[in-house]
Image (cartoon, rainbow, N blue to C red):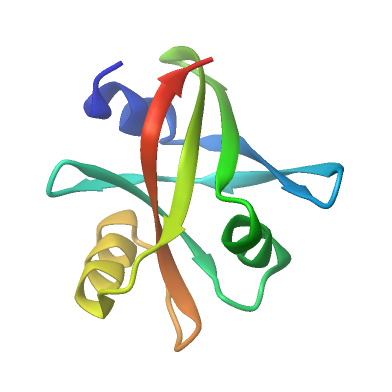
Length: 111
């Protein structure tokens, strides 16, 4: 699965699953972008989804849109470079504040 295909699939509303303790949590996200060959999405450090990814970075993603369906697993990590976070939010057209963080998907595998 090419990064451009993933970014296209994540261009509309899509769903991200995380786990807290032994309970799965699924929530909608929108948009993704590619920077330096890496796929990024955005969230906020004060949201539970961020805490869940810090505790257990393993996630699953599902998207269904005009490009078809896309389902994959990945590890999700908060970006430590503020410049990358600013670039990601700008490319996605998302507003940001001091708690905004770009999340990088690593070890992507088709599910």
